[in-house]
Image (tube, rainbow, N blue to C red; front, top):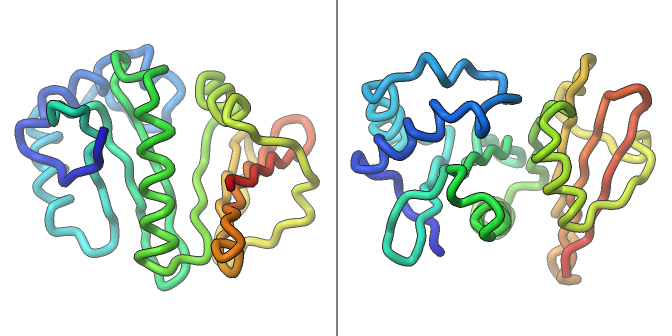
Length: 189
């Protein structure tokens, strides 16, 4: 597994997951309306984009398995995003891409916070975060500068870094607006 720049050759496999309802069912974008031209345009834009970083998650044969992103990058924050093809699910591509891009954001870009949103109806994503060791804490214990908290049914995930990497600890958190506020926190050694 590796992260690499997106390539035009990735467009057809990218379009494949966009048109797979089992992959995009609970995502907010209407991926079913996307075309191969949209994928090519996205890849071309990504190759020259200074505000966002979109990378391919590839297998050992360099086959595209998904996209992992840091979006809306500022001096100290970015939004995380990831989508993998159905054939890549459950094979470690998501956790690998997530760990690699978070490390890049914190260690190379010097970010203080990385956040992301997940619809609570996206049970696969919520299960993924649960499976990877998140535990619940109070959402009131976290203040996120420059990030609007959701008011509807969404999860806001936050990864804290500043001052903690020296201790080999990375804090990841998920803030949810279901019936009550719930926050999941994970420490990664």
